[in-house]
Length: 286
View 1: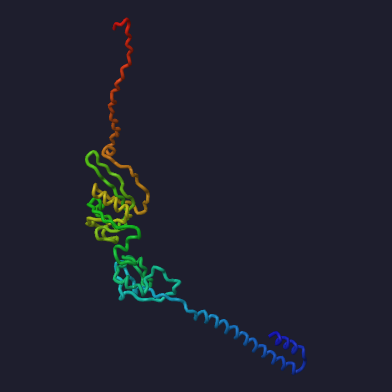
View 2 (view 1 turned 180 degrees about the horizontal axis):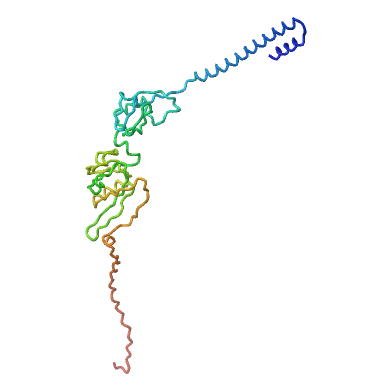
């Protein structure tokens, strides 16, 4: 390229018709050279982009709704389809074509738009389509019998938080104290999901199922056998502790608590030993 430009400059210095011809030939050669190098550059760039496009990126087949679905709809092949998405953009909790059998037949817990990848969190049963799948590792589900008061007049719902109060004793010796705080309710009767429509009226159920540790499960079981339990509803955002001080009949009525007198112990009488006496004999007479 540089040599061609030098030749053109040499021709420009020459005079006569041959110089003009040589200048024309040099210009044509210079243009052809430029076209060649430009074409070579473009070709190399195109090949580079082509190589990038030809790279095989791993794809994952995820399940998506074919139409908008609402909470409560059942997942089935008739309303779902498969879409291939690059693996780097796939949520780890997505339902894939391979795992769809576990999701089929479950009901949706949330509304989901068409084309949105289906997640296990969208399903009522999660990854495990059974009630036990709702219980985290290390925890237990315990069913407690309740009456109208303990059910908060029928307005208690799954996902509510409660405190359990324990009452034991009888008469003036009756006592009540907090047993366990901030328990998660995972079922009321056989209902495991929040029913928004039920807030319009009371619901009837005689049991609630709470999520507890194995130790708390033993405490609640024993408490039901020797006393009674009362459920107290708390705000889901409230994580504060309540006083663990027990309430007695006397403290309820505001009566002062008088300490019981200590029993007096009878001390054994101490028998003093008689002092020794010395007998003196004078003149042989006593």
